[in-house]
Length: 251
Image (cartoon, rainbow, N blue to C red; front, side):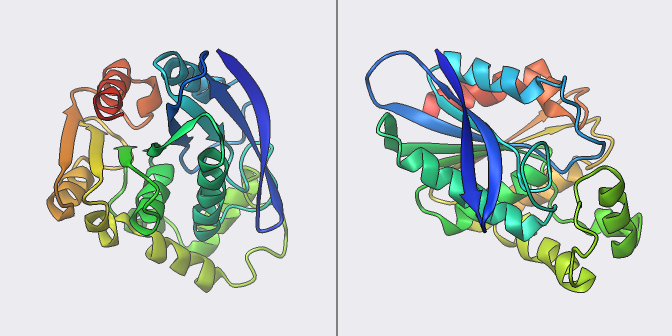
């Protein structure tokens, strides 16, 4: 197994990621893991997604993790529509790898990253399957708790919005979340496979969101509610086992 740092380009911004390659010379399925919207400043000691990538790589997936704009060491400011372009850049990178089986290009998204995964998959036929964890059906709760200006200020405080002149229009920035809203796009994943995983103890996004998404989605689809699981599903062993087994059965 080999791991190396990679750099993606989207809208002139440099995005930092890691590519994990299994050993061997045959074509392999590819998986792009998409993190969620940050709630705290970046923690350089948190290797959670790296450990997850290593796990999927050991299972035979060429696995890519990267930081969306405004997060980690990637450039830019948090912008959810911009995140969709970041993910397209990541898919372009994977699709161009000679080791990748072009018919098996999978997405695994968490929370806000799951929302972006659904949006991008709905528009990009290269995606063969989508697994989501703790995906919101919409972003209404984000702006019910605070004003858009308050949300922007919170992202400034944690370092996800760095440019004092960003966003140029708070109204347009907020409308970006309406554009990405998963409930508007999830029915376009079909005929690709879809897995929705949610914890029944999720403290941020109630399980009702998963049921709404499942009802709107077309077949083939599967919903798995994990007893006792909270919002940070990458830390939930039962959830990650479900995702890995599901992906292995379809790639």
